[in-house]
Length: 159
Image (tube, rainbow, N blue to C red):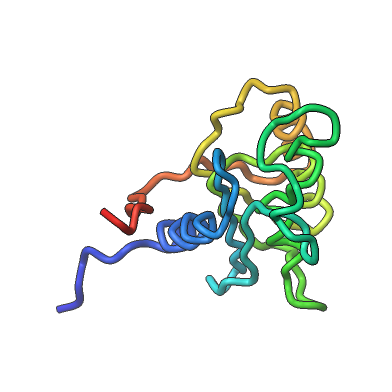
């Protein structure tokens, strides 16, 4: 008889997104993303971090003043996952699993690449204007928005 306590696909891909978030060096918010295709194959991964080729020691990791604000530099997990996709691979019809609901800028990238569904773990900025704009665009584009339901694997590996 087969094992019955295995995780489902959503739990698997969200687990991969949670693990990807562990790569982020952001001291306050670590976000991960995993893109999966219709055959349940991982297409790409991403996490929030500074742009490639720039030392993350040379840019701020806090909400400072003027140009010393991390939000001017950090690439979001969804954006990185889209950019990390193998050249020539299509994201049309794929699902993206994210640990935090995407902002309006990432929503544009999701829509432009043809990703058909977002499965999100947390929506803590639900009422912020950029999140409201994000939901509005995604809904208009027909992207399915699915809150994650399932077992969340313990992301604290040291416990």
